[in-house]
Image 1 (cartoon, rainbow, N blue to C red):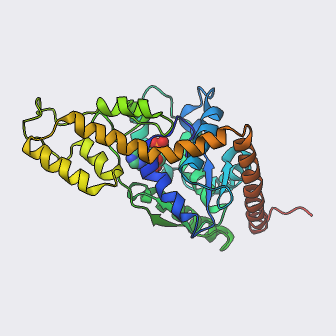
Image 2: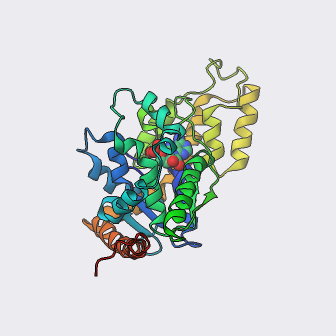
Image 3: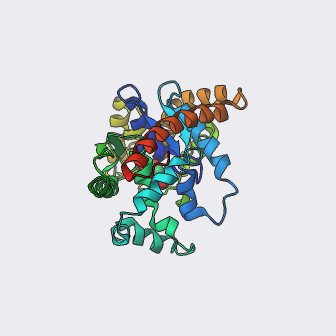
Length: 323
Ligand code: AMP
């Protein structure tokens, strides 16, 4: 995850909730992609490390366990850059120019100069991030399968040139629901300012929910409303475990027999109940100053060891061996 802002509910449903159960089935590596943050944010890096620590606090609050998984910082494992360089020797530039997000992001972020080598090369750096751990699987949503396909092509090309030294990673498709924003926009996103952050307190959550976009045609509580596609009900479905309550609210909403205030109060309650254990874990972590840094230092040392082993093998394969 790139440390470019605070984490929100979208990160919880789209990433963290998938990552947590994987810890019991796999040897997982989760990292702060600070070099990836630079690909688009190089002009202002003043907050990058602060976001890194905050993001990792949220990961642990959400259930990632440094005893089970390796949590680390990309730039503390310089071998990622060395492998990226080796890969860059065999990968044709058009392969990277063809990645759909390359042009899309340049269009979307017109205020930034993204005509850099770093930005063009980021899918290659991602490839290095994955294959340096001989990763067999990468948890991705449907929309990221194309990126992983590029990684697989890169591996095949590299192996063609230097022998079978890299493992082709497979996508591990995660259930990926794109969480809409509080404003009804199709995606909750920091840049759209429509988020509930994992670190918001109960009162902030309540206030944001009360201002949420809902059925705009429903100006009074006795007018039948639309449940389908209504973000308030999408959130109820995603976060309220009391299915009977949700069904009752939907029925009454469609009949014009419930006010928006009640629907939203119950949603705020469900969200705060869900976030409470995260808040407790984050508070426990905050009471130990320096603990996150220690976790990242230990995790990065472990990652360096694994990555270093891979690089030894690759230096042999590339025949850059001086002894
Ligand atoms: P970003 O911070 O936008 O780069 O997102 C990092 C990852 O978090 C994405 O690849 C998704 O897996 C997840 N994510 C971010 N926003 C959302 C959202 N609104 N709904 C679902 N998943 C999301």
